[in-house]
Length: 281
Image (cartoon, rainbow, N blue to C red; front, side, top):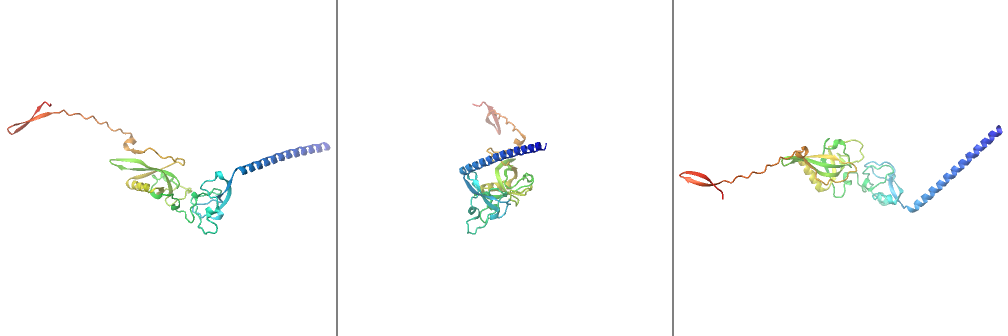
């Protein structure tokens, strides 16, 4: 019995060793295959350095060397706004340059782009977020007109004007798809709470500033929040008055009745003047 037990044990060890060897061989073959594939990919794909954040960067932070590292990234997948060298991000070496400022929150490992940091030496004010030819203009809002506090910097809104035109009150879409750049004194897009704003600030061309100033002075403005993916402009003119709202039909005008022509002659008898009807020619 003892000899039989030893033989069974040896057989089990042999089988286990064989299985382990086969598994190791299989894993080795897979590692070799992965290495070969990586080599082929490396030959066919060009990599370029790209700046990414080493930690979470909040709005208003001054960008430093420890906040950034450069990694190799496939050239075909690099965003156009990304930084691919330290000189572009921090300035030329040996030249004293004021640091950039974070304009929008950047997560750790995220590519740092031109849109998310300021220019050299600029702070995080609104002037750094305005595009060429745009102006910052503030609009007064309340709980109702400001979408109950759900507006945030970066949202797109439509603006409706309600006021008197002639003898009737109308509501009209005057601007669509404009971007908010600030709520009250907050311009950080990453606020995580609802803010019941008293003012909102939009970025618009100078002519639109004049239109908004006129609209704000002559009527009431109402904001409508757009969806994140809704970027289409309204091609039709949107205007509602009371008759359209209540579907009131205008009464049909009666056809004018032609008056019968009457011809007369004047006759004087003494001091009395009479008009005598006569046939019309």
